[in-house]
Amino acid sequence: MIIIYARGGTLGGGAKELSLGDLEPGGFSIGPHGEIAFVASSSADASELYCLASADAQPRRLTDLNTW
Image 1 (cartoon, rainbow, N blue to C red):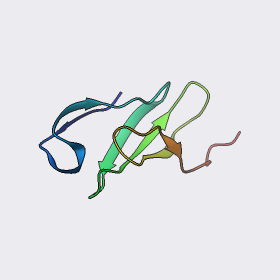
Image 2 (cartoon, rainbow, N blue to C red; image 1 turned 60 degrees about the horizontal axis):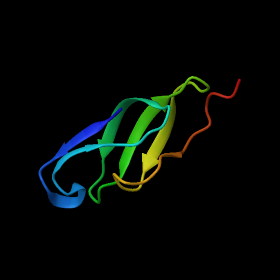
Image 3 (cartoon, helix red, strand yellow; image 1 turned 90 degrees about the vertical axis):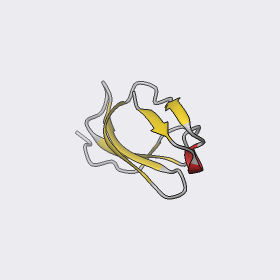
């Protein structure tokens, strides 16, 4: 779970819990327009890179590095 505390701007202020399904996030970064990039794993996949277009978007997987 990622909870973002923002002071206004592109994320709207206040706290926002992101809907990530079964993903277990690691580090993350917030872009200048509110996009969020993060590394996450799940019970089915090792760590991969994901992106949220906004705090209300669904995660989109960007990499497929850990195919076994």
